[in-house]
Image 1 (tube, rainbow, N blue to C red):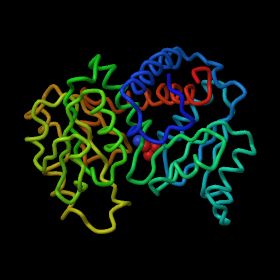
Image 2 (image 1 turned 45 degrees about the vertical axis):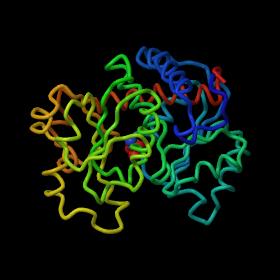
Image 3 (image 1 turned 180 degrees about the vertical axis):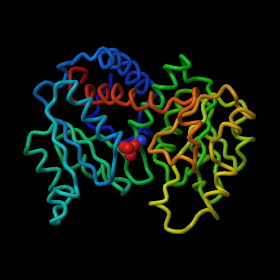
Image 4 (image 1 turned 30 degrees about the vertical axis):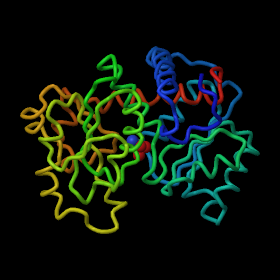
Amino acid sequence: MLRKKDLLGLKDLSKEELERILAHAAEMKSAFVARESLDNLKGKCVATLFYENSTRTKNSFETAARLLGARTISISVATSSVKKGESLIDTGRTLDALLTDVIVIRHSMAGTPALLAKNVRASVVNAGDGMNEHPTQSLLDLFTMKEKFGTIKGLKVVMVGDVRHSRVARSNLWALGKLGAETAIVAPYTLIPKGIEELGCEVYTDFEDAAAGANVVMGLRIQLERQKIGLFPSISEYGEHFAVTEEKLAEICPDALVMHPGPVNRGVEITSGVVDGESSLINEQVTNGVAVRMAVMDFLAGGER
Ligand code: CP
């Protein structure tokens, strides 16, 4: 059983806890696709508090909360009292006073969800903190892989692109290793963070070397908004070596399935043909995100607690 107040990252979750969440997400997916509403969070309140933009994660959590019968509060930082100078902790305490049970937070600074969690009664779920972790994105990636391949153990998963700025890559490396997958990252030297191999992955700067024999190729978004300096010479040069294209997949790993956390920069880190092609799992990832978030919130505040 998962007996925690918060979900701040996957670094500290055990293999058994990861497997328990994935199993419960499968039950939740059955209800979601059957368009059933559940009452696991009836009488509870889920708040989304996003200091960074989001389409998938925010709407996925809000959909999941409503499907579980919760009332929802959506704080858009741009129009909230944060703009009048209210601190993070005071915002959190205001949500506690509104009898919120789960706060889902995204922030550009690593560690912000952990700080909030120490100061509020509500359970806190990290929806992405800086370059640290994005645990529910990784859980939905794991769920999608398990659904497609039956198991994660023994899969070869290659992540290509802006690993340096990617919280998705970090959460996936923590979790995939625990579940027995072989992992590799491939990027230009400037986008490979120091010490990343300590998370158990092979490190490459050549796509062909990295992707040979891959079961999953995961494209990572080029996060131009987090790059203070240019970290590669030009988009076209980056694309030539690192973009996920139909040609590279056909030549190097024709059976690989393609994932991407989104949002996608079409024509930058991945071609439109791959995004919309038969090997793409990108839309399934979005659907599975709702099931995984239903499972996580049920563990933290609902009937599975
Ligand atoms: N994958 C992801 O976090 O997407 P959003 O930024 O749209 O939430």
